Length: 126
Image 1: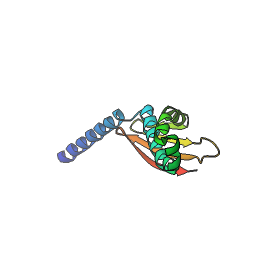
Image 2: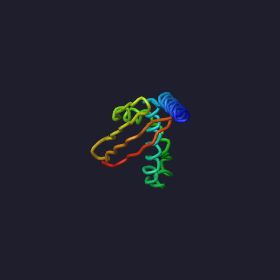
Image 3: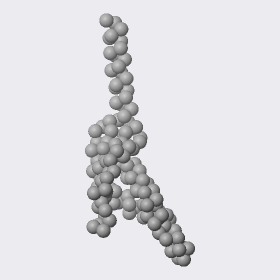
Image 4: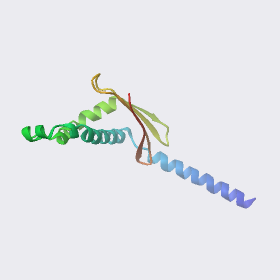
């Protein structure tokens, strides 16, 4: 019976240590906004900038990627306004519903934050 008790105590201690580690490394909402803005910037650069005609780029010295980078503060504000955080102490779930206007499709993202990392497990066009 002593071995079973030792294993039970060790398992309990390990679970407590894991819980403390998760709680202390649960990322903040500000960190999520930075993460989401970075991911959205990357997506817009890949999808939007690749569709601008090269002739336009050459004629007016238009740099699509620099233009998108300049909108980073506004993107963070949009993300902040459209995000709900569900904090479960050990981890957080962020639900972002981006609806900019009726001409641009809306998107819904769900992200889990834990251990100072983010994992977007749902991204769908509405």
